[in-house]
Image (cartoon, rainbow, N blue to C red):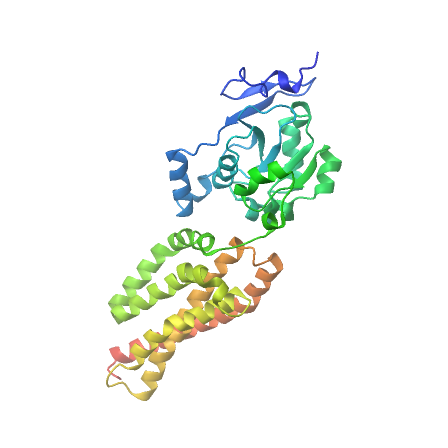
Length: 354
């Protein structure tokens, strides 16, 4: 006799807390892991480390099927990435609900980015539905996918290949309780926003990535050109990794590259004024001293600003590709020119020309 879906892991009271198996006909056993809605100190520490880019690819969980609470065969099922922050946001938002969570193998990448890369995609969802044996566990044939995962999921293809109907849930996990109560997403739940708190939380990981080379360059500049030059290097990096996401909507122009050039140019003004006011410099040296930060700092800030294109809903693949081909050569020319000017100025000092 074929076991019914509710006769094993989906039955309250008798399911073990460890992974368990449900067998349907001749299918392989379905492994159902247990999750809960409580975020522990270990979870919070994991989130902190992930935000700071520490062990960046290590913040993942095992793909597969998880049960939350005591779900039955007709309970809702949600799709999630195997990035711990995505999974934890989903399970914590579903406190008090009985549900299943189908975790896709997104290689430790969040839903939004994985959808763009294709790992949170139709093939992976269909494959995971089959591997989890959902047809033998659930009578419910509706799987709820995060709205930000929609670019990677073709609902008609999923239904044709698996028999499960894809329904796109709200943008934010915390709207899920109301979404489940109403049975649909309101226009407000569908609205994609990118407030300052969501932008600033992206800064630490970018800052950590460039911290070591920035310190080395700043130390070298301090030794070769003084404190102001070292501060200029630090200011350009902070502008590109911290100020840029904070001020993103307020900087004019559409492209991230030009936004970065504008912000870097503004940050460079005090350093330009300081270098240009150096005493006893001939006119040509004053011009070179003024141009050096105006060339290098905007280029550095703009380059770092490009890193945020993959973290926002403002951009697309084609738009990012266009920006790279259009503006990276400009940034390179500016940076190289500024470095050459700095070398000329430094060499002139060493040779006693100025």
